[in-house]
Each structure stands twice: as structure tokens, then as C-alpha cells.
Length: 83
Image (cartoon, rainbow, N blue to C red):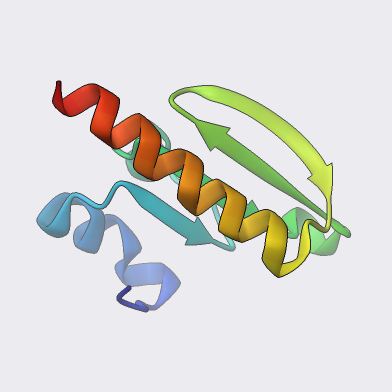
């Protein structure tokens, strides 16, 4: 995991090609280049938007356990893509 400032996120995604990104602002680069992403509290709202392999859904605050499930699901998707 590598924390980056929001203004540096697009460059970091292009350079490092992460499978999963947690962010506070969604960009086209994150949306189109990452296998999975989590948009935390858009517009200060108590919800998150989760995208796994292009399938997007919005949930109330998932807590740590919910985020860990996203990490596990991303690992499975990445393994499936590699084969």
C-alpha cells in the first residue's frame, strides 16, 4: 500500500498499475485503469462507492471488515485475470 496525495493519484496509478485504489476523489484514470476501486465518502456523504471489475455499487459505510472483503474480492479477481 502506498499513500499518495489526491493530486498525485493519477500519476501513481499510471506508474504503479495497482489492482485496488481507495480514494476520496474518483478520476477517469482510476476508473478505467484499476481492477477495483473504493470511493470513500463522496461529497462528504456517509456512503462509499465500490467498483469490482467494472461492477459498481454504493453502500453505507462498510467499516474495516467491508473494506477487507473488497481486498479479498480484488485478489480473487486478479488471480482469475492472470489465468
